[in-house]
Image (cartoon, rainbow, N blue to C red; front, top):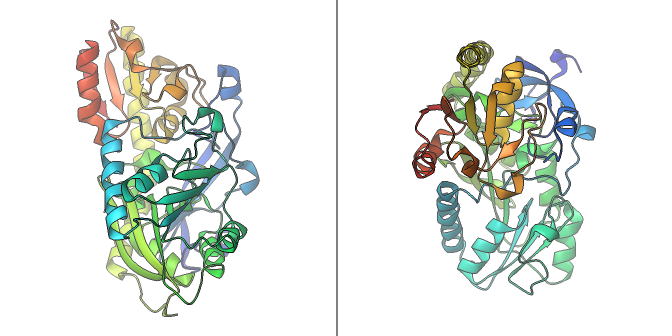
Length: 401
């Protein structure tokens, strides 16, 4: 594909341009590696990021789906953080009330270990079915229980919903959180979903994705990862759903503007005429065009800062071995050997960071240590992490990226 052949994955427009290229990034940021050697040998892929001038959608123009196969070694749960759990609790309460889920059935696409689906169903007195190929029954304390939910360790497709319909299950709500950005052709996936939804009743769906506006305009430059084919803004998310035949209700930013949700219903009225706000899209495009220089400048600045630590014989700690932390460590390159990495997720303890091979430690390992600084990968967790550092007796500079 040449740059002239680019087509927007959300709205289908050909008015697209490339604004950033990243070489040889890890294909998976959230796959756990048991050895440093396997982490350093992790599969890599290049990213050519393009943006649509008609709807503001950002996508990886060179994404290769054959590189990305999800399995049980994939681990991206955020529920170990009290700050994130507070957000998830509030969202579960909201969905249970807004969609009147009492006694109903909820389906979640890409449900992970079923944590959020279980929260919604327990609050609503509902039952649920989740689908996710990364589901690991051995790590699920609820596996085998005859509880409110079940998780199928298979990817979701139209046959799954058709099977539920054959069993007499008509979901009151279809959920999909932090997954649509992984689909190679998101509009085609939504069209496929709509093809097995009934046309004689309204079917609500609720999707949540990372908010590209945060990544482009508020310093979230470490959010660009190979696993994500798409980066949605509000105009492009709405355009994608309308193109697939849904009615679009509210799109709104969430979780400190880092996430974006859309409430939609099937079937739509066939009206795809609602055009995105051209001024808003133009501002998004301008931000994308400036991002290449920002990535280069931030990477250079952090390398210099870590080199100064090397000269003084001290180290830094990166708090967070998720996508942001993995991307940061790989972009700073050789200087990553000066960095310790901690994460509160116990499943990551003793594992290694994709690409660089750094061992992931539990924060308790910092007790009694004297780092020069702790680098916080997500500013929303600054207060939470600051409290944990005080409990550990660690007194040092705390820096957000």
